[in-house]
Image (cartoon, rainbow over all chains, first blue to last red; front, side, top):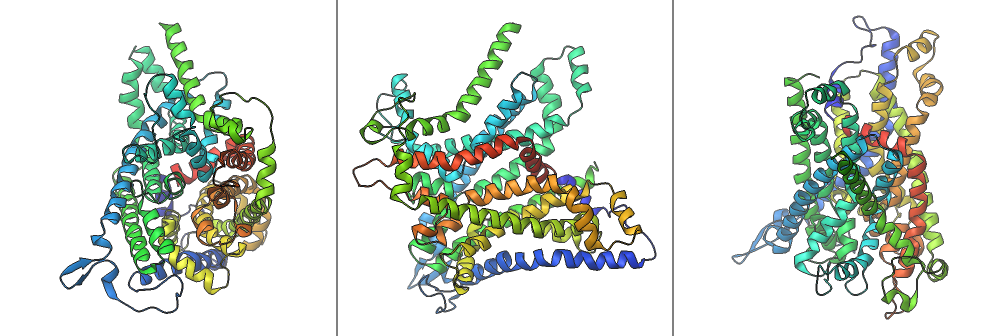
Length: 323
Length: 274
């Protein structure tokens, strides 16, 4: 992301400087013509729905009749009826879903980062069959999330699942575990499936960074007889850090809006419900467009805040360290 | 020591490969088993029983679901590429005022949580009478694919040498001709990459497809699989679900294996650079 930010700030070098020729003017005019269709469509299918969602969060709209609603201010978020506080911000289920989402994001992204580095280092080594290996690890990423959730659902089946069977055979557990239904294991199960599915993405991004590193540093380190582990922590890790941070931010933003995996794996279970699952449940299952939109708006605000911070951090870093 | 390191390395490679492949392998094995066979665990395929594959198409409109997914994904890819290439030309080759800000906005839209537009999109789709129709899903999915299509194509567009278009402009070509005659052929590889990513995103999309369709005939593959049930409450539907999963995953795996390099190039252009 950082290098693109840098490029966006620098004027295109072939742009004629000084007096504007008719060619430049016609190019500038055409620029707006070329982006207009995309901008209009994006405003129509992203900007407008977002604005309407935020508006709905201040109304008592119902899914069955979206034309008949009243403005009720912040009551979906927080309201006081006869000294009793109501609204989204007082709903323990909402806060539980926030906690689930944050916990899921932190744990799964951490594990994926570590495993992603390991897999990337493997793929960066020259060995016969490297190309095949790279194709193999892309498969979990390409399988539709719903399908992978169903596959794991079956593998984790409490009575007939292969995971319980394996663990029983190996003597690691004494009785079958109800992976997705047990509150103690449910969220870990979601994390495990997510790790399986998205570690390849992390690994490929890190691998791309690894492959851009100059080889002579490693030659030098080898000549000096420095231990590979030390080389990794002292040389490799600092050098790939910018790419690593970008990959982590992307993954974290993705994990914060998790829906498919949790919805299919554990349905609307309170133990694993993410913010997105909560919002959709209010909106569709309970038909409460107002409350659902309020939850959606909060999710949007949380993620928007993170995006702004990230982009700002990217700019600041560029100012200090022009690459 | 050296031998030990090599053995350790290969064990690690084998472990990663096994972990990546086993769920799909097990889905294939399970898809060949039906009825009471599913009450026991089998690690190896016993026989080639295709009854689940027949049942998937027999008991529900799964063929229709696949067709719906193909129509939606193909249309979304075509629209995203057509809009994306023209926009990317402007973003990548012309220094106009406000470009950086607009690009940032588009990048931000691609990071949007889908659920943030859910109720607004629901209203939009319903007011156009597109609820439970494929055009409604196409419209919704465009929100997911268009921003990153523009973004990735812009990064590709920037890397082309400037002499290419200068020569054309000197010869008196208009910007539109330059895009069509000069950049379109040059962007073909990038368009394949981006198109593939957009196809995969649309093919896998679940939240919109689940919320904006009602009847089984209009569903795309992901909600169809998610909502699949057995023929009776006492039957385990897992054989058929696994068969359906294998059917829709095979084309994606084929795409990934064939276009492996291109997909990786697109992902890294979209994320590391983007």
